[in-house]
Image 1 (cartoon, helix red, strand yellow):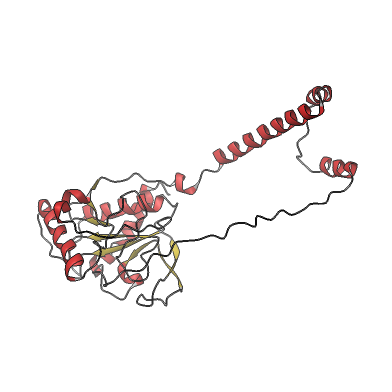
Image 2 (cartoon, helix red, strand yellow; image 1 turned 120 degrees about the horizontal axis):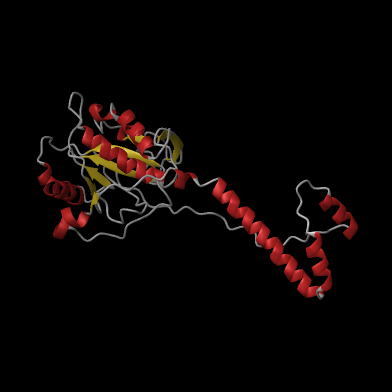
Length: 294
């Protein structure tokens, strides 16, 4: 289930660094040389190189010295990068097969505003669509069109709210427009649509309803892939800022939530149903394994 209404996009900003130049006063040359030579690990120009530089005209010697130092710094930077790869690269997970929205939506698409984006995805919210179970998976495109028409028609949303929808056979469908590989701002939960992805299980998973393993495995695959791009551990917690007071948290409050959360973690609702909520631990563990975490 999805609460009505979306949230306006607020772009993340960073103040530019101060462009003013600060003058630096240095001591006498010999004092500087002594200080440099006393620094452990400070680089020294080899004797042969110093002899060659002494034979060169002033400007040529300076240029040669600069090129030598620059090469040493670049090699050191490359060695550091190899020794400490980014978490996002280390825990990247493969993208699962995803059916594009053009396949299931076709000519039923309505005119809508341009998609909105965040800088990255650090959390996943799991939902259920609160639609009938027991469907034939061949009929899912038609069922999704019904969900889309209900949200864009009766509720007057600009698009389907979920970023992805997974059926009981484990097939993943692209939901909201904007690009499968991009951090599209969804409309799947009040207060926490930014920096999150909404994954909906097609059906109703209240207490006592069997939850297919194919469905939970597919949710885990999407979660591992999207969270892996930001280096986020699916078993961990993340800090999210609530965008409005209709969530469980006041507008502007920072909430610490599971990286793979149920809809009800951020909003007062019974979604994603007690049966699917009970499987969130399995989903987190599977997603972590897919990222290559111990």
